[in-house]
Image 1 (cartoon, rainbow, N blue to C red):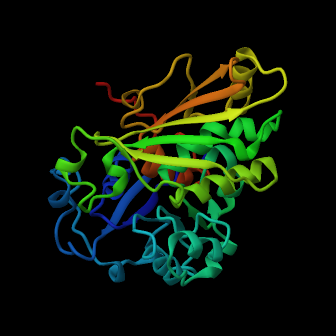
Image 2 (image 1 turned 135 degrees about the vertical axis):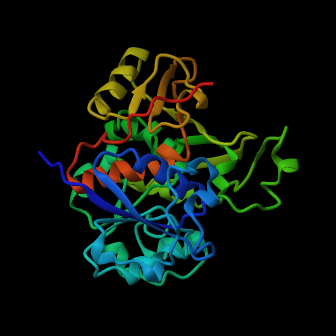
Length: 348
């Protein structure tokens, strides 16, 4: 039985993801959070940035150049896309396990990345070893990985909602999938913008990135691997006037004898050994997963239109980011995959 305590570092302390990583890791029985970095807040305490950690995690923040990677087992990169790749390049030969929470290595190639992210990729070699970090689909590869690309929050909810149907291939039209997804404002990150100002978000609701959101290709690629053919689906994100949570509603037409009982069985069988996917008997709400690493799915068969309608609810900061990253860490270290992640959702 593996009882080792692992030394953990977080690069990027100021954002929501860095805060959530710390919240989870300080209660993880086999992790010791020994280093947290911030270039803009170097010398401050972590609790100066995130007051909820006052007296709990008062670690002094250091610069990334002060990290002693030889003293670490795992390093989380809680950095924006376009920035993270430089740190992966810097530490590629360090022997440390890297979990990147940006979008820099989630896609199949630097060419696809540059097309959708509209910027050059400075470490294309990273794509040769990076593993897409969705434990429900790639656990075996994650266990052997040195670099894991943690999925985006929208793709996590969207892929989990459709994966059983794409894997089964039963009478589906892969190009007919439509995903209508809504996210809380923390999905936009900690830095304020015109879009995220209170006056623009409060008592408001709108779509954005219509037909062009970069998470579209991430979803398409992962579902393509399951169905073994190219997928071209419709994904439309919306901004909710709430702080956290994602609700994704996916639609897929099915020909050939589907029933509610068969659909339920398909989802139960596909996720039967996955500790953080819960198949619900009624449509889930975002407060029913708040603060947790659970993904709640509700598959519904609409016999009138011959469509499966699948509702997925996750916490974008936990299952959609930090919690999934810790799940990946557990797999990479060979410890219980649920360790440190069994928080009960907070409601109300």
